[in-house]
Image 1 (cartoon, rainbow, N blue to C red):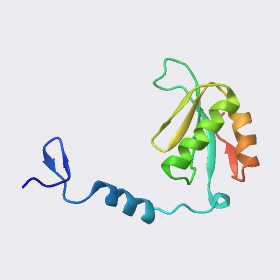
Image 2 (cartoon, helix red, strand yellow):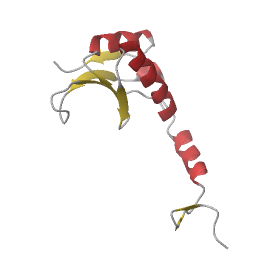
Image 3 (spheres, rainbow, N blue to C red):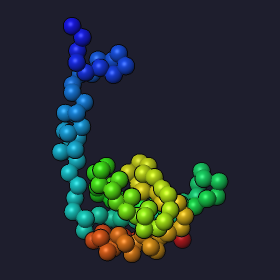
Image 4 (tube, helix red, strand yellow):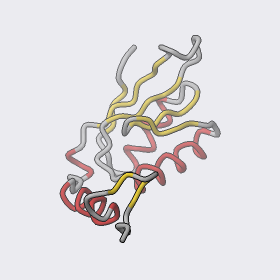
Length: 112
């Protein structure tokens, strides 16, 4: 009899959904006031095009996705979430710091 949980023919040792729930419960996010949120600008690897990068947010993946959507709409620009950081296309650092401060985060502008 074939095990119920497989991924492309590889047998999984446990239920993937249960493993994700355990990771979510173990990595509880600290309070928003304790976070060291930095808003910087990066151009490396983007052919000189700049992006505003928000790092240090203590949020889970769905909450980070919702915040990224809100910030992208505020700036009127596209963006993405990469390695737990929100990237917004263009230089919107001042606007992002103002909005994150309004939401209760101690956001600071980093870089030049």
